[in-house]
Length: 312
Image (cartoon, rainbow, N blue to C red; front, side):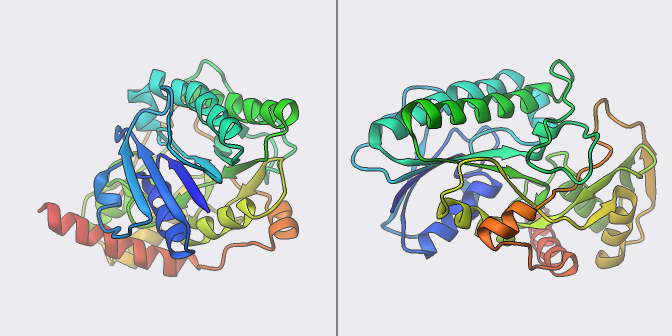
């Protein structure tokens, strides 16, 4: 297939580029690089790969046929969407509209990268796909949450009105190589702190829960969803839940760090629980995570150590 990935120079997008190229597909990567990085795709040496620096909230022209569009462009961490609130809303609304229009014109299939953030600070755990969520539309996380909720609604509208072949993946916490060193999320916050012997910053009392899916597992799930005929949202993530404090202690243990843990006030609307119900993914895609937390963290820590050494 000839596949367009928006946000293809980001953490998840770049891993998808690798995976799709390894599967023999042709990949067109678009990214405006406000949170993505050329470093994430510099290693790709393939005649089947093209990169365009482009803002997908503008009119998109691509020559030739396209079989599939994967819309992954968006700031995705609290630090990023606090810094780029309008860009976050625009890429969720205008970017989704422009890419859906391109898919309609090219008669291409379409996959939206949505997020567990559509569930907000959930009152139900684990979160199944039929849970409507508990979202504050004007809170500090609202620009991301509502951008993705609108994007999902727009995708479903194009599916029902224009009979477009669509998919929606709701991605839960994912980690791995190529995460930005200081993007504000728990993995790229804790690992550099531990490696440098700095205090690990835990917000609140650390009793809030998260789950952690290694990027290689997630990418396989996304590909299986691409190859399916499921048009309604599907959760992808690791259902093994742990507290942020437990995770901080795990990072200290694996890195062999002597870092202490310090506590800071919990940010507004920070989810207290985050755990996917992946029953649908198991049944429809025969998918569940395979990489253990220990194995995934060892790979990720090795990458962060190399990056920190490189940056001096």
